[in-house]
Amino acid sequence: MIAGTDSVDLPPGVSLREGRLEDIVRGDSWALNGSGAFVLGRVGCPLDVIVREISDAFELPLEAARLDVLRFAWALNTLALVNVVQRGSRIRRLADWVTLALRLAPAGAFPIPLARRHSLDTRSVPRALASALTATGPRIAAVALLATAVALQLAAASGATGSVFLLAMALGAGTGIGLGLHEAGHVASLRGVPSALVLRGRRTFVLHAPVDERRRAFVALCGPGMVVMVGLAFVVAGVAIVTPGLVILGLPLTAHALSLTMIGGDGRVACGI
Amino acid sequence: MRDLKAFALGAVAVAVLAYTIAAALAVTAQAAGRSLDVALGPFVVVSVARETTTAVTTFGSGLFLVALLGGIANLAAAQLIRHRSGRHRDRVE
Image (cartoon, rainbow over all chains, first blue to last red; front, side, top):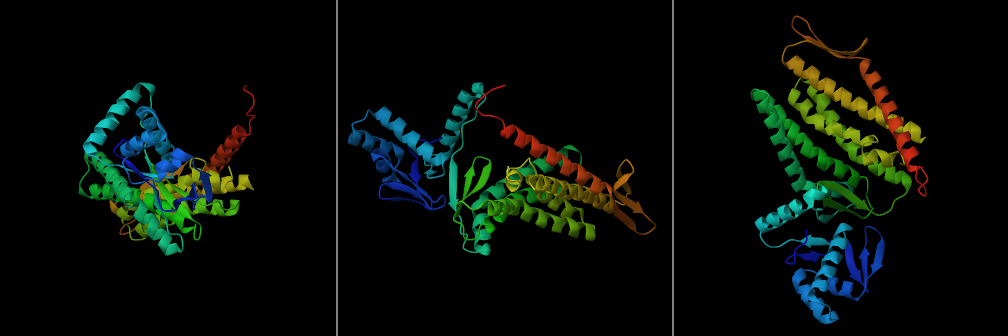
């Protein structure tokens, strides 16, 4: 959802140059018409203000200008070419989201989430790993907390005792860490390739400049591959010293191996499908 | 080559997952001082045998069987996806 109080911002790697919107990551640029250049020339301004200005400048009815500006911002955000900076109270946004979700519910649809693009530093493997983990940090924490809460709830419901709660926490932590390492693995294999990390709803993906088929397959394999290696290290260590917590911590990490099959996009890319 | 890749990736993925689950079961049984025996027919996947003071954990050939089945399933899924995406886009059946 984009509100009139929100503003748009150009993420790192996207710039305006001579009337064109240029994306370094995609290695492409798009010509802007007059109104598009007008809107993107005012990044940081609330969209309501831009709507009024564009209505005056192009002699458009206010409602038509509003529709045009919001559609334009939405389309660019869908392509991860602008980030939407949300302002106003979170409670108000949540209420608006619930209202829209209720209106869409009869059609079996949900409000489409906004995309947020983060820059990645792929100049070296350590920088790539650090920037990927920084970009996914809040999501790792959220997934770990959610998975821990679910696992603890299941443990409590099954009448478990103390040590099982620790295992449930290990499972939750592994789930969160797995997400971060998966994306970090992809990014580490993209050394020297302009890339960005995009979060859209529950989806996380790495946008990168075009590479040849072999490199693309390698990048696809490195994401789940790295998580599986780390997971196996935990499992083997857990078996060696007979510590169930370590094996359980490794379980959600090794489960990323399923991404290598046709179930996951990475497996399909690796097989050239 | 694509078929080989699909088979290999499926087999590796399922083998890793099966080994992890088997290890989790074995270590939990070992820590709890119990014995365990998981098998697919005559093929042992994992077993924990208690002796007087020690426990012996064995990962058996059942893991290879599971991996083989995983590879075949992934290969079948890959062929199905390719078959479907290869249909003519200008007609309906």
